[in-house]
Image (cartoon, rainbow, N blue to C red):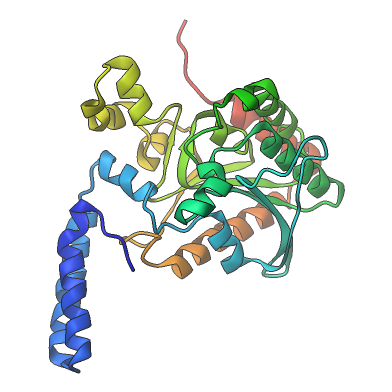
Amino acid sequence: MATYLEFEKKIEKIQEEIVSAHAIANLEAVEKYQKELEKEVEKTFGSLNDYQKLQLARHADRPYSLDYIKLIMDDAYEIHGDRAFRDDPAILCYIGWIDGQKTMVIGEQKGRGVKNKIKRNFGMPNPEGYRKALRAVKMAEKFDIPVLMLIDTPGAYPGLGAEERGQSEAIAKNLFEFVSVKVPMISVVIGEGGSGGALAIGVADKLAMMRYSVFAVISPEGCSAILWNDPSKVEVATKALKITPSDLLDHKLIDDILDEPLIGAHRDKATSAAVLKEYFLDNVAALRELTVDELLDQRYKRLTAVGAFSE
């Protein structure tokens, strides 16, 4: 059953009318309500504020990494474990084919339903997850396989065990190592990109965001708690943080915005997957035209150009 957010209630009502019209085979009414639906979608989604976009990024029905892997990959084989501690289910590593292109896909997975959410630790990786990702990237480099990374996490897990096992070191090592990997690397924020948990698989030749995704140094809830000690300031914090794709593109912190369906990836997963696949394949083809030295130099310049300063 589809989940509707508060600002989608009118869309939900029209959808119910369409279902009822279909049930009694009233095609004239179906056509009428379809037109109403199109108008309401354009009206609602054409004027979303930043907080509503955050809600969409966290939507319960939004496709997760595993959904995209199943939709775009053939003969996908999962790689487990960091060869040091354990396998972290919050990060997935799959090797397979995308339209004939051998690919390594690394993605953060939140999980659906209580049991699965707990298994995936709500998409918050432990250090062994980031070490598994690094192992997969090194494998891809060894066999000259491009890498697609899918970011979707509220942040790295802040638990005591994670800190004892070197959470910050694992993230820092990925940042350091990914800079010099000699194969094309493309990273896409598909939902929520939170803090170091997102950065750990965000160092790439191209960093893009889906239309209704967010990328932030801290969650709006965390920001409102620290700055104002007031949970009601979440909407203000969301706007102040500049976490939407358009804001980040304006500040040259990302390269592209992927144009998922206006009504959201959660309503049309197949089209969203097709957009993601096309973006990856187009960029791999372009990056393959560079020599390894040119690839690494371009990646280095892209990363060191982030930010601004004045003297």
